Length: 118
Image (tube, rainbow, N blue to C red; front, side, top):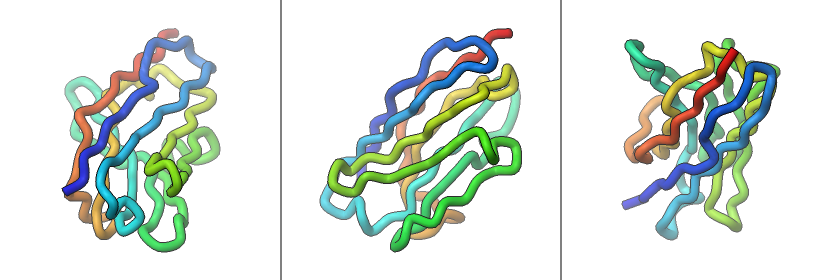
């Protein structure tokens, strides 16, 4: 069992930056792929970014490439999402997730709200 706790969300103006953190409990953190997803109001949950289980290769949604950076610090059981050049359309609840593969996340955090104002 893995428990995930996100933090770092908030209100920011367009063009600004935020860094989200996700701390994982459990000794098996290093066995999982880790990722960030988001759900905007009235929309389905969508993939944002993830790192692979063994070698931390990063993958990004086209909508955030060049603006967001995902990273993992294994010694801290933490995965980060650095978000720059934020846009109003980035407004959403952001969820941290863990799974054997990026496509099959099985553990989810409760989410952190990110609101970007114009």
